[in-house]
Amino acid sequence: MHEMSLVAGIMRILEDEARAQQFSRVRTVVLEVGGLSHADAEALRFAFEAQKPGTLAAAARLDIVTTPGTAWCMDCAEPVPLARRGDACPRCGGYKLQVTAGEDLRVRELEVE
Image (cartoon, rainbow, N blue to C red; front, top):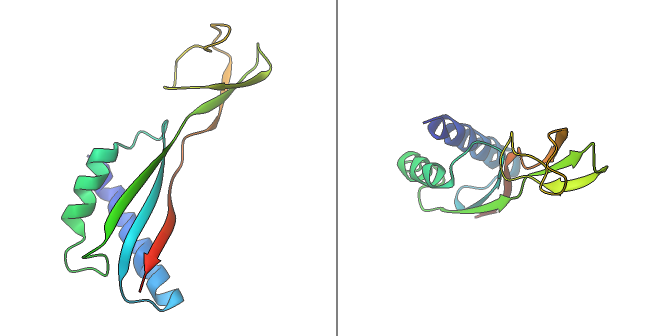
């Protein structure tokens, strides 16, 4: 499960930000997870709960905001929603799609003390 290594990276971000911004506790972490990111929200929650003891996020809550995938359809010449890579355009049925959003996984907000 690659979510364990993703959460390890998130914990490093929290530690770096704690040093830079001089906070000692994280109360809430808001993650933005793109629908095309290949990251499973429940696996991220499990990994976060497993890794937070003994860290500055020991009592933190994890909120996950899922953002939809979108693509530019070269046949329609307009943006379209995209649930999965490899899907056809929901408007014309074509496959000439360029993903434009929904691949990201990022720390969107932190509530700290």
